[in-house]
Length: 199
Image (cartoon, rainbow, N blue to C red; front, top):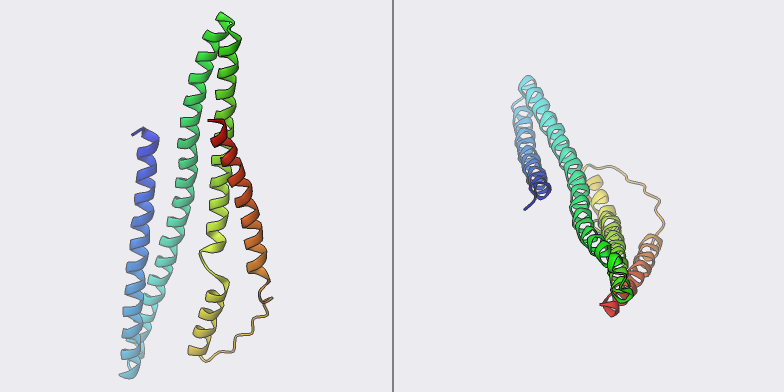
């Protein structure tokens, strides 16, 4: 395991720790809210205010932990890209060394073979990069289905006795996103098939 991969592991571990801390703060916030209700029922407003402040502090802390976790995960994704690029670069360096030796001997067959390998490395890198970009963009849009988000917002508004007026276009967002994603998937599939044929 290279130093870069060790750093990547540590970053991912730190992000998980921050997520755990965020969940712990959420539990503390709920406990403080329960104490606020009890204090209000007993008519002790000062104690209720202290618990309310604690609840707000825990909520802010939870959000801060989550925000930091997301930032660390973004850095980890960049490090992952760097690790992948480094591996590809090493492969290409090996090809270049082989190319130097072959060019000296001027064996056209060997030169052609090396050029094929070199181009293959670049195509593999292109496919990997495209796949990574596609995955990163799709995870942000597909992990939270819009209808679930809408229903949760309405549910919470009903609990609070509020009227939630959301004017969202129905049924359009999902189909557009899926057709773009499937077009990108088709392109990636054809590129992968082309790479397999060349091997």
